[in-house]
Length: 101
Image (cartoon, rainbow, N blue to C red; front, top):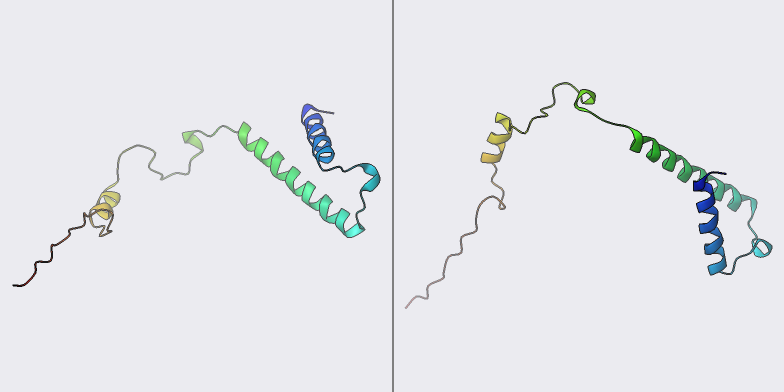
């Protein structure tokens, strides 16, 4: 049994004690058992995939061709920023209402 399995056993034991659950009072139908088994297998698969991804090293060579990996802006990006009419890029101007006399 690996360290991860031992840690999971300790966590589950503590959780069961907290909620006063013992092997004697657990009653699950066959449908509930299958659903629980599916959930646990799904979580286990996600964890294994996550652990595999954490061990991968991605470099510039792994990136698709044609991506701009430098910190320089492309001409299209500069033009689209300059043409942006978003209210976030232009200051609001408040006009004072003058009372008519």
